[in-house]
Image (cartoon, rainbow, N blue to C red; front, side, top):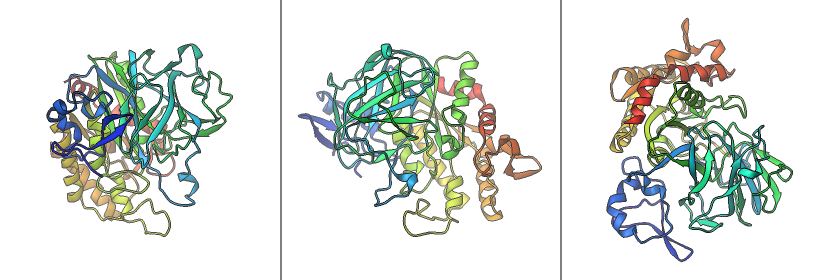
Length: 452
């Protein structure tokens, strides 16, 4: 993978224009940090991946909903969990819940991990029906264009923002984003655990359909559309990033019971309508190691998934339990999602946290470190977890601490989750547990950090 440098801008041809190529920025030097130096060079480019440079200017755009992508394993006969739906020449309708209101919106699409252009022939957004199913409120439907064109082709590794759409966005309400895909389009990247039912239509362009009739297939992932932004120059965003515990694994389907959802509700109940909360967790993700299934290591993806989000001012980081656990998983033939089985120590993990903290501070972001939650680990792995948590609590390396461990652990058996907070696998919280996590966040401090 390439990254943009001042002397070597990655460029690709798109509709006769030069299109800056935004591909996997490193944590230490994300592409956006080159915006000032590259600005003069790119000033005449008409259609660009605007998100690459938005964070460096006083942008009025604020991310109200977002998700993070991971590659779909490119193997023959993948197991059922990794079989993507057929989307070629069909319409994909995805349901999202923004956490910030606005009167003008735009959509962000990504071809991360793509090997071929991402072709969307028609992209529309509408208020979803009352049951947040595939039906939409037809009178609210609006088309999102790109440079005034209905269709867009995004090169491999590229990203693009739509033109502004004049549409009322209400925080907490469901919106349906409908994408009529190119006739040869395949899904090669997704957000695998959406905890939300989404839909694929019968063949044809059904992006404008208010009815759910054409949307016969369901899937529980997000794809391509990775952000919904609103024009809200006085507002800002808190980004939650981590693994499956942030992603909301084993939370109730279609009910928004993940801890970032509960945090967003706490913000609203506090009377604040100017701070959004977005969830950039990826189930299975690790701090230090890439995975064929679970995405890039967080130290790598932090640049793309957090730094690149317009309007983000504060971050809550919860990551590391998979680094500790996957090292002990036995390698196996076929698709091994836990590979590489890299041994970690508290020192190696602390070094990784410091890299993320440095990347956040370099962009002026405040970052809160969250302690690793109980996972019924054997003694050796539990020792690493405790050492990491002790450092998070006492090092003052983070701008603040969220003690999820203390909030969820059973006092009489601190290596385990409280029974009421355990979803049943002794690692992932229940809906009640996720709510307890949100309640453990020092709201005033986090919101204040987001306003700076």
